Image (cartoon, rainbow, N blue to C red):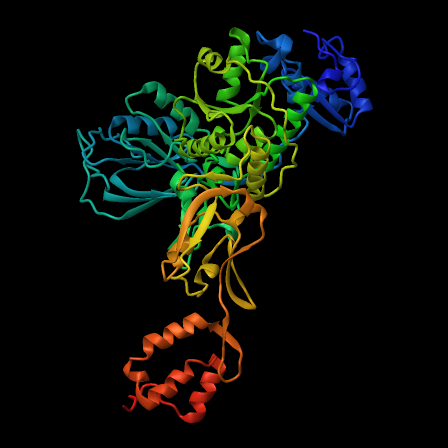
Length: 634
């Protein structure tokens, strides 16, 4: 198919054989432009080599418009999608940090039978081996002790590649005179082993999630799996870099305050055990984190944010791509298809080569992990004009997708109440290209007349609020109020005015700054857009005066801090300095009037002290020689 360069937002002459006979066109573009996007990924190494040879100092981008757009039964209508793909390719992914793990090859092999010993023999030339057999293992003694074979049962295991620590019960050394079967001396509990690698061929329950760096596991009855394990383990010596998937800002975390637990979303979702409670915040171990991204997608404050790439980078790609789609003449509301490189790209390639290909209104967007997509990205896609989005994942993913499903459920509620299709955002758990064709080749809907072009904010919470506002503004049926299910990251605090004493303990406990006071007056104020529904305020209130109401109230979001309760201050009867509130002082006086310490004439003097500020009360007690423990005269 032939597409005009201008229709794709490009400049210069078109080409049909750029990587071969028309390579001079590419060289000329390098000389003319500081930024060049090539609509081909197959020959990217060649183009990069040519650019390097020419000393090109500009920026080179690559976009695949063949398998994702041109190779399709609807390829003749795919020019708007091609424009979108090229526009998105011009926004480079944000950089991320890496961490280094060191392995010296010290390896503990956990086994139950002869397979563990045979495995150790295969690896003994490259790794420093110790074998730990389960009690009762039937193993023939080796003719020579070249590496230890011990007995034990792992009670506890922690760590990662280069830093494992295991606590072992039933630990015993072998009897050196063992004959037909390896025997062991008396066992003891509580032995500790440290190592760089753990190889598990016990066939039992895994010690760690399958993504734990340095933990390798195989079925001892499967020779093919054991052979693959030998190949993989023999290469696990040296320094290994892994991405730091999550950027974490502890000050934003709403996990806990004053030992009272609030938000636990990330703790509930992490499949690898990388997240632990750490006082007022959580701690995320980057050595263990496998990068599923569900903690970041669920985090209501932005304390945990995904780094590959950052969320606003994905939103910027969506904005650029959808603007280019409509500018190139797109008449339908496109479906954004989020997918990963390994699974999703392979399926898209397969359907392009052997199936129907992607429909012209389905725009693929590659991300690191499908489960990193949160409600802010979903809302942004709809606000920018998408008719819906699909997240493509494996039928049997490496980890549960509970967090992703919760985000989709939340979006279904919001979509229903704003006139969007309740199924606008959905999950495709598919391994078969034909099934992918069936799921995606559905009738396209007409583009909406109103679309947003907002610039993504660089903080996750701000992006979430703005994306939801813009999604609602451009929705088929905009509304000011959306009722939400419990657990939503938006909502209000409801106050029982009669119960509240304005002690303001909730203000000090609120991690998001949604509750605030007034330094000049006894007052409790609330900023609804900042509330993440962590419930710490509810747990903190000594009077049980607070409750949570999950909702989106856009009028309240737009309003300044609103006053939940205000009272006149009580003036010190000695110096007139305001302290406390009238109602609280009157309540205390009323409760204490029948107490023995405040009865009679002396008690009246004590009651008078309660109407003074701290300074005046202290001065009065010192000057009068007042004994607070002396029984009042009646």
